[in-house]
Length: 565
Ligand code: HEM
Image (tube, rainbow, N blue to C red):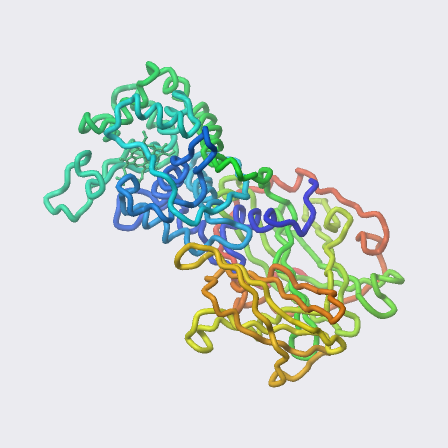
């Protein structure tokens, strides 16, 4: 309830966890759901992802606080202890999603939460803020041939006592199984040894208690119990406390509860130098992709708002105040407003499992450059009697400046222009300003060597791009390999040192189609909206959170025309 936009890394994490996709709509969630089989195998993508998460965590040393879920696994897959096709499959699945505010290690944690959720398991709470290691960490993943004493002391080193060890292994091994190509001494190879034989740990692909019940009933198929006894680590682990822990987690409910707690602990097993964020909870109103820019002969303002629908007759309008002129800051009560130009259903494995219905509305409106825009807010009619003003807890959504603006429509991936790596970036700077320096501070994490890159580049006045709407254009190229999720802060610095910034711009949005521009209306009626100075009416209750599952499988990026107005 205390959330206020903008807030990083919360904003980026919340969008990703509940929408399942990058801001450009490229979906990581769709790689894993609905509890998808990995093509050419008899295991799930979820199983491969969860194994990788544990192998990253397993190098934690609780006594010196080193290792843990830090993304070092990206540099460790050539190790015997991380053998298996599933590891490399997972790296390639996850590699295009880390971004400035979502570390590789956070992406790995999110992968675990989605994997469990999409295979019918519980919703594991999630925190962000993990810090990436840029080199391989220590060895230390347990081996199926280890005696129980070494397994126990290995888990103790990671911070898990005997019953936690049993819980963690049982919750992990409810997914997936063992393949002959990876562990031929456990699962005998087929006649053609290049064809993998898969022996699942239990006979469901779901994240369920069958791994426990079949073990307790001695009907288990778990290859790490029933096959090669020198490799029977699950047998040794599960029985290591006389089956007390396994019995305690044998019902569907106790299994789900136990796994929630122990996976939460696994995901929070991070180097002691890392401070995690609070849990990232779903916001009922979430603003994103805000951009004031120059389009044709006017300014153009873009913003998206994601709502948790209560009915399919939800109606939302964006309101805003001028920045300059007689109605500046809604002086005289003059507000402008528009209907969305399009909307798209969004969902992730987590929001789908929660049964919430999320819709993102995009607003694209022309802004008279002499009036500009100072702040905006939304009026939402949920169609069930609840009408609210979403005004960022009374603070409104503030457009902090209009001196320097990114122009995504004129910017390009360098590969499009010259075949070279990097990004060609165009900025609009108000013609009345004579900045001493215009530059971009770029950050990329989805790089081919997985190592984050941070660098600044100057932009120069570009006279081949004629001034428009009172703005001159500056351009320059970020020439390092930043990857697709490159983000940058765009600065304009005056001679006296004053800097204006268009912060957190996202290169992935270049070339992404926008909704149509909406018609702008204005009104002096109504007192709603903190911008008019009136106290705001807010009823952001739980009431709107109860709509059914709906067909929450849409892909973001396709803006369908909304039907109202
Ligand atoms: C005593 C500790 C452990 C040992 C010795 C062990 C061993 C193994 C082995 C040999 C495989 C087969 C991999 C392959 O064929 O590619 C496997 C798969 C798997 N492990 Fe573990 N594991 C242990 C603990 C864990 C834990 C704690 C988790 C997660 C919390 C986990 C999650 C998984 C998953 C999900 C798979 C299936 C992967 C797939 O189907 O592709 N394991 N494990």
